[in-house]
Length: 75
Image 1 (cartoon, one colour):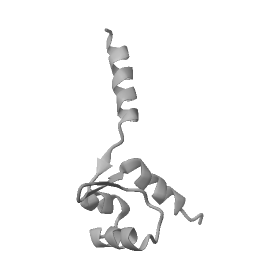
Image 2 (image 1 turned 60 degrees about the vertical axis):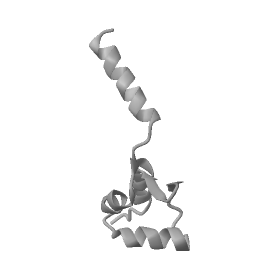
Image 3 (image 1 turned 180 degrees about the vertical axis):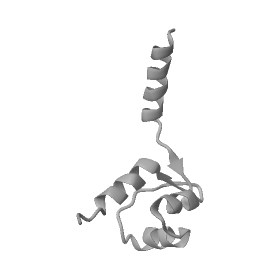
Image 4 (image 1 turned 90 degrees about the vertical axis):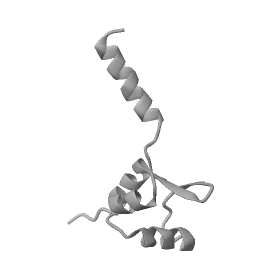
């Protein structure tokens, strides 16, 4: 297998598997305190998708970036 084909497969694999972040790193991406994300989850203030695995909460990095982009204000 050549190097280019290997890169294509690696890129494809990364696209299929989302990057999941725990609460603290997710809050850092948004520039918020982790408590703010907890509050948003409980009150459903924003439609920010998350995954719950047992007691752990995960956010998809792509969802966080899309959330930020949707809040952009033209200046």
